[in-house]
Image 1 (cartoon, rainbow, N blue to C red):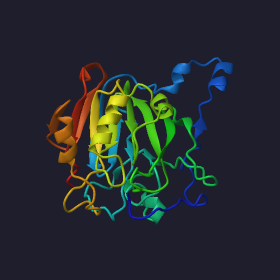
Image 2 (cartoon, rainbow, N blue to C red):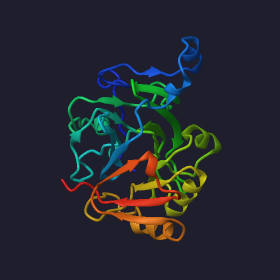
Image 3 (cartoon, rainbow, N blue to C red):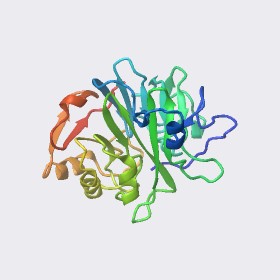
Image 4 (cartoon, rainbow, N blue to C red):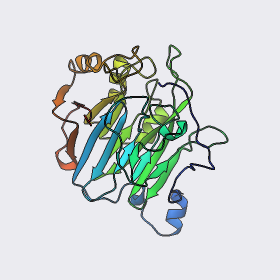
Length: 282
């Protein structure tokens, strides 16, 4: 949720800043004699650093690769983890806890990143498909609803999936219902899930468990979008413990000391693990 919906003025902040997005079209690739492997990241397998900056915001970086930030929050959410440097910023939808520029706040990251707004400004729909953001980063945009069964949330969101360091990540934004067959197919063989669990405006703990089961390739689940006393402006969201308590009846739950973890494609868990990271303190 979300404290209101904003919008990006295409004259001020276009779909991408700094460089133009290029959509990956299978036919065009074949015509040029290129391999279909370009639909995934070209980064070699190795350690990938994942850092939790609070609420629904993470950064992901393979060694020597770009810093990918997903869902920075505006200062309305008083988590202390922002700003930090980023090379690419992926924004899932135009709410204040996911899109600071939608509300005129443009200092939630350092440097001059490529900012990705996945919606068509005329139709308001997600521009679904595979899009090359950088030479070694192709992101799949998949549309989903932000309206829960009880009527919480508002509008549409974009689910992002992409490969870094031989690991396929998927950020589920403010997903409000379990996945459809088409969404499961679009996300692909995901290894690591960033999954909302707090309910009220997204899926709740029980629905999050269903989503994990819908993606049998998943090995690591990183919960997001839950209530934290003193930091979350929406007290009707459930705390993390509601999800980890339920998840612990089926999966291994690991309390990670600190806000960062490294993930290696060669040493992913054999079965699903829930990793509960602290968020960046300052």
